[in-house]
Image 1 (cartoon, rainbow, N blue to C red):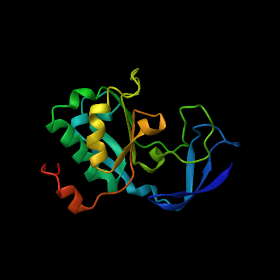
Image 2: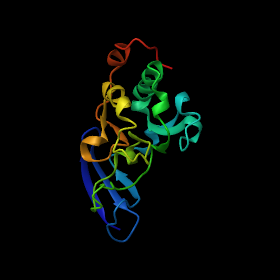
Image 3: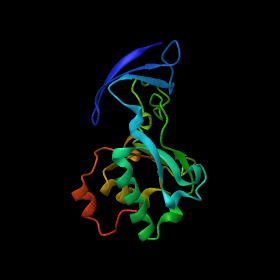
Image 4: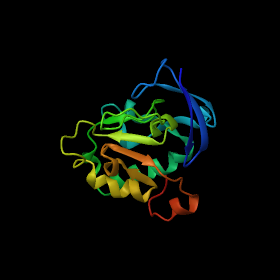
Length: 173
């Protein structure tokens, strides 16, 4: 089983291996060092309770991202934009990246760390359905995957401090 080391911008040096005997696109991975999977914990996002694929709103997310993900959905709800969320393809998935080009990537997906969420995966409009939501995720420290041809994807690019979270008017849920 191939092993590799990756320097993640949020977590530092991560050592992992694939579950298959050779590199395969999107293959499952196992962390060997550098990332403690116990920090990925269940989070209930009330706004996703009725959304297909969202497990009644209970998703596994890195604990350092809980507050900012909850805040993003609170902001989206407060602006009457929840109707743009049609489906959720999940958060945690310990695997290699699956570039939309179909190429093999030997890097872990940010889903493996519980810091990414996919919404409206069947959107035929290359992100049109989630475009109104992007500014709210971006304000909460997320990058929108449209920049790298994955418009259903939002991933944490930095963990917000309590001060940054409190800069927004809505209280945490």
